[in-house]
Image (cartoon, rainbow, N blue to C red; front, side):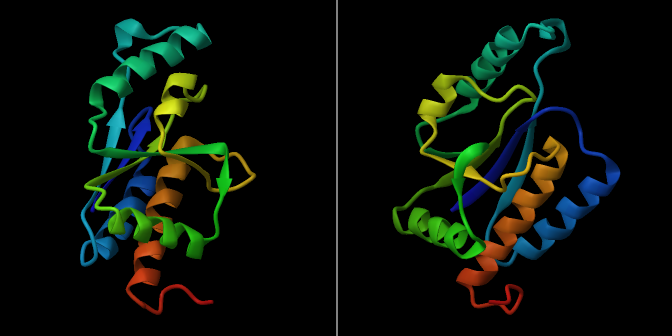
Length: 157
């Protein structure tokens, strides 16, 4: 199963990028993974929250394919432990999911259409984090999940 982390927003700060590269290298023996940054065109930039969310929805729906298993990362989603996170990965692999997309929406969240399109909605924490940090946390938790599934000593129970 290929994993893609999609994030609406700007490029990563260098320290975030370094952390993501670090975990991508660790994930490499287990799985393929990539980070996809999605930016709305500057000419479409607006301060209207609903219009911004609709523009991001359009961008996301164009990119989504039927074979994508969409997991929305959202503070209102289901809280999972690292072991439960790994079990969700295993279930997707068992179901033959080709591509799992972990979606980090824009600054104002996502539309109800995107929420309905999501196969699952997960929360990383009750806390709210900056989007760039969520990219790094999602990458680390993906590595942790794969290491749990592969009996690596990384995750200490």
